[in-house]
Length: 265
Length: 249
Image 1 (cartoon, each protein chain N blue to C red):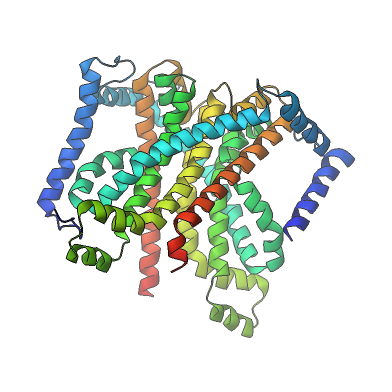
Image 2: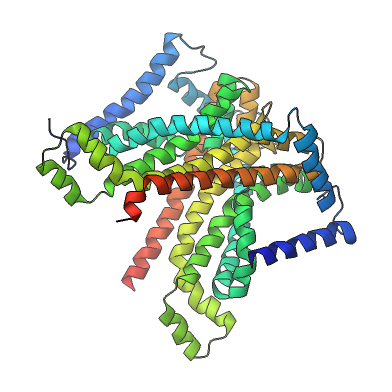
């Protein structure tokens, strides 16, 4: 039989049918395994039970807060860590892209630190800033920081030379060069970096809250685990997935708008 | 220039901790303390084992999960790339799993498998699985259409098509995915070991933070960084070997 080389065109209807079949198969298999009694219900609840628990968590508090309140405190920490990473990282990246000496000093250090997994900062985060807000924020920061720096740096470094030359001919100062030439030219690269950094930041937040926090969505997971309640753990995972997806969708939208505006200009 | 940076950094470290004692030893260790902590863990051991045993334990788990995820993820991604029907069928389940970060699987893995190695391997599997699938899929999609058409025109068999066109064509992207997933595996393992483990580098970090032993925390972090970098480097070597045909073209 000859190989299916070029992907055969798939009619919209057939694609949709297959997608629905896949969706049903996924939940069907899950439900079957859970309902068959092969695995204890406590360890694998049915999809419906998880949904019920999810709804219940939004109404009755678990470990002190409802699901929304946990998410709100997680999101607050995320916004602080991510915001701080962007505020420090983007200017640093642009400066490194412009001043060679700064690049030469910071780059080796940065490359070395990048290999330290964000989560490895946990002991120091707890030691220096405690488990309230400071500790988790440091960990989110260490996850979200590198893409901010790298993308701003790349944007500034690989700018079209004629822009720089034109600005220099017109006598631009260092400050104006960075704010009025490098920054605008790097925006697409920076926004792409922000998307990566938001994803990593959100992941680091979950990790941080699993270890050093007393509220938040990660804390809810840990407490669900301690109570051996799989349905609480799974509800928390669903909530994490939804928020992570929403953050990414929002930044994707921003990216698309910027591209559209640039294309139109 | 890199050497100068590190020399400068080391001088600042020494000055701030040992000479002027601006930073108290309870917050960040002095160079001498760190050296002692390193000697302690290498020679007599810390957190129930010596350093090389912790490293081997962590690396072993990462490799187990990484290889298992690659063996499942790469063929799945290739199949999704090659067949639209298969993609339509698998995508819904994949899209549901994809936004859940690997670290969020840790509590579930602990509920299912406890604090032992099985839970760690499961988490690492999830960390490596998603990038392996996505990049193998994109790898197939980036194969130039005329190569595919030529293969079809020559009437190659299905097996030969997979071996000679699909896999080599997707290989560069597959390796990009493997590099990403190896890094994700490493981070995830450290997190998993911090939360609950009996050995490994994350366990060293955990024990050091319980003991409020900053010097050992630094040693643990440095070991995590060096080991992670070394694994990435080895994978880079493998990539260059496997993709030699591409570079020589």
